[in-house]
Each structure stands twice: as C-alpha cells, then as structure tokens.
Image (cartoon, rainbow, N blue to C red; front, side, top):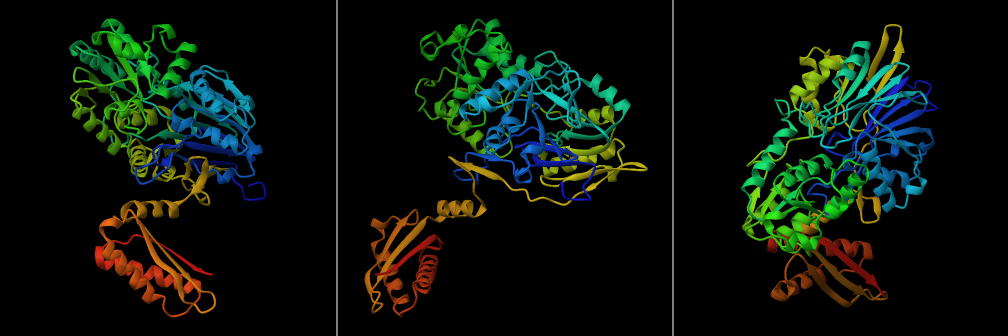
Length: 558
C-alpha cells in the first residue's frame, strides 16, 4: 500500500466473516494505518477432517504488523476473539480494546498461549468517551446479543463516520435489561454516516427475533414439570443465559453446578467480574451433582452444538467420567445448530433419546432464541443509521445478498450497496462531489486451518487426500529391484488399510501382486515403474471392487 501512488483515502477490507459464519475480521485503513475489528475463528465443517479450528487469512498483514494502530473486539464469542492469540504468535503486538467480560475471556486464551504478559489490553465500556487512535476516532454503543457485554463500534474518519454493528438484535426485554442503543445510533444517523457494515446472520428470517424473556419463561416451565435432575447445554460464552438458568433454579428451589472446561472457566470469569450473581461456593461440586436429591440439581454443561469432546456429548454416549445420565433426567439443549453443525447436533439428540432421558430442544419448546436480529431488526437498523454506503457482513453469501436487497427496499441506491466476500476491498476517495466508493483489487482469501500444532500447513490437497482415505482406504505396494540386472528381488508385497480386510481376501491380493509383477517386468526407471504399479493397481481395484483407493507405490533399487 505504501508504495502505491493510487492508494485510496480509506479502505475497508474484510478478512473473515463475509461469505461464511465465523472467523469475523474487518480491517479499516487510512494513511497506511490499520484498525482491526475482531479476530475470530471458525469451527471446522464436517468435510474438514482432522481440523481443530479455522482462522482468517491474514496474508494482507504480512510484514505490516507495525501499521496496525489497534485491535477492537466487539464481544467475547470465539468467532470474534478466538484467532487473536494465533495472530499475536505471528507477531502482532498492537493495543487491544475490549469490554471487561470480553477482556476476561481473552486473558484466559492468552494465558494458554503464554502471551498474556506481552499483550497490551485496555478495558472500554459502551459509554466510553471518544478514543483517538491515530486517524481513527473510536466510540462504542451497547448492542443486545447472546453475550452481555457486546458493543458495536463507531469509527470517525476524515471522510466520515463508519458504523460497524457486529452481532446484534433489537430486544425490548433482554436478559440484562440493556437493549441495543438505538438513541445513540439515531443521533449519529442524523449527523450523517458514510458507511455501515452490519450483521446479516438471520437475513432469511422474515420477522424480528423473539425476546430473551420468552426463553426464561420456557425454561421455567420445563423446571416446574421436571421431577428429576435437570441438565442444560448452552454456549459457554452465553453468560446471560447462564444467569437466567441460575435465576430460574433459585425460584424453583434447585442448586446449580457447571461442567465442561470452557463452561467452568467462563463462569469463573463471570463471577470474578460481577457478571454472574452467584458465588463459587454456591456452585455444586461434581460429587453433589450425583449424590444430592435429583429434584435439587441443575447442571449447566458444554455441548450445545454436539461438539465431539464436550461434556454433554460424552454424557450422551455414556463415557463422561463424572456424570451418568438416567431415565429420570431432563436434558435441555438451549441452542439451535450453527450452520454446518446440524449433523453433530442431531446425533447428540438421537443419543440422548436412546438413553431414555426427557429431551427438550428448540424444535419442541422456546428454550433458545437467536442472538441475531431478523429482517425486521435489520430494516430498523438501516432506517435508523441511514448510511450513504452499506456493506452486509457476518453471514454466508445468500445472507449478504438478502441483506443487500433489504437495504434497497428501505431506500438505498443499488450502486451504494456492496455485497462482497472475504478479501474484497472497498476503496473510498474524497472528491469534489463528496466521497466515492468502488471495489478495489481482490486479495486472495483462503481458510487457514489449524491441525494440532500446525497452523496453515493443511490445504485443500491434504483435505482431499483425507477424504479419499476415509472413503476408499489405501494400498501400499512394495517392490525392490536389483540395481544391476533390474530383476525383482523382493515383492511385490501389498499392504491394505481401509480398502479390504486382507485376511479374508488372500486370493484377490495374490492376483493383484501377479498383476504388478507383470506390469513392471520390463526394465525401466524407478519413476516409470512406480507409475506402472499405481496404474495397474487402480485399474485392478476399479474392476474388482468398483473402488479407487489411494495407491502408494514404493519402488526401490538395491
């Protein structure tokens, strides 16, 4: 950028969250200074075999960490803060600004990565005075979301004001009593807003999202009818939902315990910072969860998305070390499946039903409402802020398109609505007629996958190989030749895993070995002979079994 004479006066560049659910990350750049809003991760889809998490593609920032003025975090969900430790490990050391609960959860992550001592963390509130960070004038506004300390961000620049809503809904009766601050947004809208980027997650939902108050009423109804123990799975970061459960439990004469690593950690942070009205001593121990009268017990657990290693999933298959479910238990899944998680979610439901427990979930009762608004909420936001330009954010591509169409329905010119995906910048320039906007040069954007300690070393080719291995297995064929006369001195020996059970298919394996011997009879280089082994085995497997396993020829000369 710094060497480009035609650089824009202002650039907006999404690196994550546009075209997918998760890994939210937005860059705003002025005069070679960069402001980052959120650095989130995404959980792998079912076809990302062996992958732990997915990060935004931050190649644009390579060698430019010194240009980053600050990182602003809107709230503490994983899809907004989870990738920041990985980016800091790469060398980012800019100051980070977050609300107290978001900061508390981030500190735990940074401690795990041994980065807390190096981090420059700053606590802000929705009522903070103007923060002047380089060319960016930062103000915050409270947003109602499934996280009690969420904020949207206003960025005042030399070209005008930018509003980044992050995730929000318009709930008149939220759990924390703090609705989204429309008064502040209306004031800025009347003063003039250059650009708004806004949550699009529920753009297919034609109505406004229902109130969190309905969830508490539904949960209380389940509590009244349950005679035995109650176990509830919800997002570990949904501290507001946890408090609702605590409140209902108290009214119904029950005590609460928490289980699952992230739930235990987040509840500790919530208690320490005053976001949860309960003490550590009031919480049940795991022993008490099993020994007390079932009618006195409520257990809040991780696993609302069917995550394979979570507490609820382990309980559903009977291998949790401390909690054993029985038919007198009532289990509530207080969440709906995130797109891509439906298979895990439904599998957990089936396993719970197999155990004979009474299962309550979003299809049967209103035990969950989304933290994101619907189309009515989005229309209200557009009408309140009245931006000159609009970029739908945070959603899969269809969500962005639908949100863009909604903006036109409420009166925005089509040419001022930019439906873009990760890696597509929008460049703004001051002109005699005001500020103009256009699409900039597209930057490569890919999924950066984390597998164990490896970050970014797994790509589509490796995933394709893993899928092939999972579908058809593999065959290794070892053949050793005499370096002098070219004759076979060992093999062919065939080893199969995941293709056929070798002990039951001796005849077929011997036929395959004869075919390989015939294919490499004529003397040739090891490379050519390797190719002949592979081709012969692939043809044989296709003909005999109708499958195409991965074939690994090992051809040596000694």
